[in-house]
Image 1 (cartoon, one colour):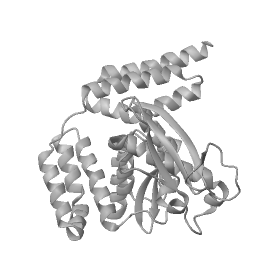
Image 2 (cartoon, rainbow, N blue to C red):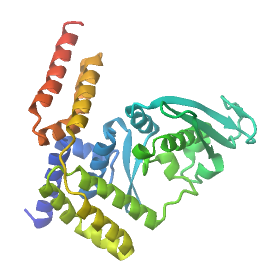
Image 3 (cartoon, one colour):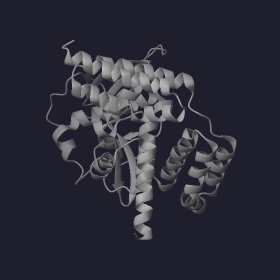
Image 4 (spheres, rainbow, N blue to C red):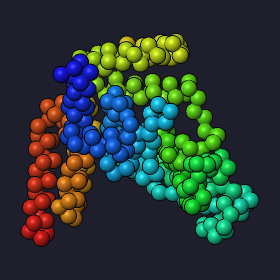
Length: 319
C-alpha cells in the first residue's frame, strides 16, 4: 500500500469514526450533496451538520465546491428546522410581493418579475414581527445560473426574504449560514477575508465540540496547514484564533443538553407512522448516539434503541 493510499484510508476511517456514518453513506455524500470535497473538507462539513443538527441526506444542508473552494449552504427547510428547534419560532407573516415598493400583495400574478419580496419572522419573546425585504435585482443571478429564477422568480426571491428574516430573528443559530439562492446573488459580499473569517469561526466550533483535551489538541495540530494559511493572509485573525484556543479548554457535552435531545429523539421516534419512518428517525440519531457514547451514557443509548424496538413492534401489531 502506498503512503498516499494509506493516508486516504486513515482519513476515511477518521470520518467514519467521528460521524457514525457507514463507508457507503460517506461515499453517497461525496457523490451527491458534498460532491468533489476532500476528506478534510468532508470532515468540516460533517461537523457543521452536527453543530446545526441538519441532515445532509434530507438535503437540508450542502457542501458546494466552486473554483476549488468549499462553501456550506443550507436549504430553506434547514433554516425553518433550526428556527423551530429553538422553541421560540411562531411562524411568519408572508411572503408578500411588490412591483413598486408601495403596494404589497399575497399572490404575485404578473408575468414580469416582482420588484421585491418581504417576510416577517415571529418570535414568542419578541413583541413585534421582524420584517426583511429582498429586492429581486440584488439576488437574481445572471446567466448561466438564472434558470430557476426565470422559471420561478417570485418563489426564489420569497425564499431569500424568508432567510433574511429568520437570520434576523435567530442570529445565534443562523449566523454564517446561507442558502444557495443567496450564494449566487451578483452583489453578495464574499471577499477572501470574509471567507477566511467564516472558516475560522467554523474551526472554533470544531475546537469547542472536542470532549477531551487530547481530542482538542489533535484537532489543533491537524489544522497546522490551515493556521499557516491564515497567518499568511491575516496575522491578526490567526492571533484571534490562538487566543481563543488558549482560553477555551475542552469540556464534555452538557448533561442537560444531551438529556433534552434524547427526550426529543424518543418522542420523534414514537410519532413515526411507518417502519421506514422509524428507521429514518433512528438514523438521524447517529450524531447524538456518538455524543452519548463519548459521555459514557449507556442508559440514554438504551432508551433510544428501546424506543425504536418498541415502536417497530407496535407498527407490526397494527397499533
